[in-house]
Length: 336
Image (cartoon, rainbow, N blue to C red; front, side):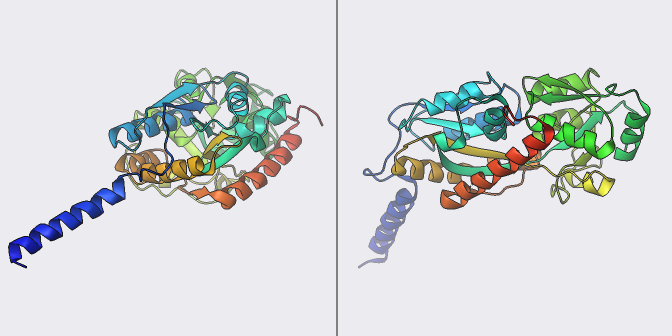
């Protein structure tokens, strides 16, 4: 065989190998029509931002032949979206991105729904919560804020949050118990609106996810006091002046023994075909391997845990129990 022929043969072989890595086998399952991606929350919040980023990544990198259509169904604290999935048994062309309202909404409202009415697909990440104040406020530490809260009439300080009896209000109740104060909780439709209300000084503080307030922090409009995690955030990139996500102390180190992280995960309707579930697990692995996803994770200071299969199901079971305990302690259960 001549050198030229060998080179041509090798080139053909390498081309075939490369193609096999990216081309879905003809026998494998894949969507045959557009995939509806439900967000059980309002526009501008963390779940909405993540869903639309995923939509953009799939389109840009041509990861799926069909289009992804993001649909916000925030009614009833997300119950509208979850009931849609519940009533779509066996439909492999529907996905939902979940947050903690997966647990809190049925517990608080009594709507006939639980995570067991869906098929777990994958945990994409865990989201953090940060205690924020307006940058013009005099509070630069948790201690200064708590001192002012204790000196003020009960309920004078307002906490803006997403929804009622959801994760933001759970943290607010925990904050009341930890400080011995009374806080007025003001619910809004989504995290984007909550951030705007803090910038406008209509509330005194929020516990927005990092991705929901990073633009306002970068713009010098809000100030983070602490993060509700057991350890500091890992991001070292400068965001506001010389400050990075890792600059924010934990709330526990500031005297508030409160920890809370939130799921960013994917589910499908019940009775979803296994090959469809496997398809989406692989799809989201490809999404997570893109530079756009890496940037989102850095911008939002996410905990980048990933799970699928039995591990994910086991984690969800444990979280449901934890949220039932938290909701009971806060007095938020629809039936006690």
